[in-house]
Length: 132
Length: 132
DNA sequence: GCACTTGACGAGAACGATTATCATTACTAC
DNA sequence: GTAGTAATGATAATCGTTCTCGTCAAGTGC
Image (cartoon, rainbow over all chains, first blue to last red):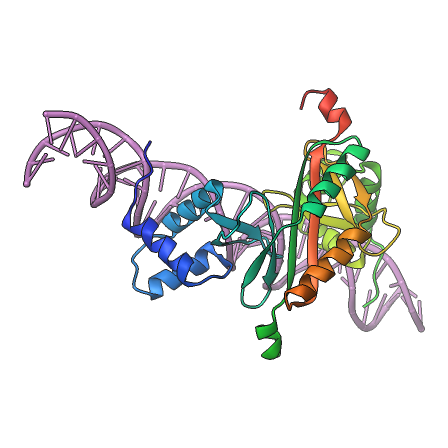
């Protein structure tokens, strides 16, 4: 039941560290393959998923329903993202106001066990400069 | 290019009106088929999609990435939802505070053209009473 | 260092939601 | 009624993701 440090897991972490952007599992796999790492697609999926569960990476869903991953820089527990729709660059957002607002709305409507998702998408200044 | 009033489109609107819950395209199709409507799955997808574009129905993505549809009751333009994860019941939420907060965060980080998604999920009182 | 246990890997098949294809049907305007 | 054309529907195709299962190798105890 021990978590093993494999060559592949290390390679994924390296890739995540090098490119600090939100990318899909397939994009990460492709980037790593191009970079010379021999690694299976299923392995990339498996590891990104377990890392996301462990809180080591952030996972968001884009407008097409694809899941995008990026190394997590968060200090605290729960946070949101402001992500560039063109390059995948993102900053982490603390939104205590949103958290409490969500809880309040839930209670007002008789809902319990409230969960929320909230993601911001935009065009970063670099991409805007390129005319994207 | 005229929008035609077909038997199928009417049937979909009827179904949406009868069951005021968030359901996937497939669930709506199944419910209609069980109810005696002969209609193709592709047609359900097409119509729900175009209705969503037209703003007649609301579309959200659940945690599995599936798209759920429900008749839109919104008064204004942009709004969010508080949805029961068990029965699909939902209330529409106006969140002017969130809108302006999102815009502000975007501007602070040099992002333009900000878009945002925000959905609340919880257990409604009826489902909580059932022990769900 | 060596054998062994078992978690991890990987190639490909399977899956499931959604979309595209295209011949056929049926609204609408005239 | 008729022509024109948007809409339909059965089915194939797409595509992200997950499963299968035989193989491999990281950790562990000696």
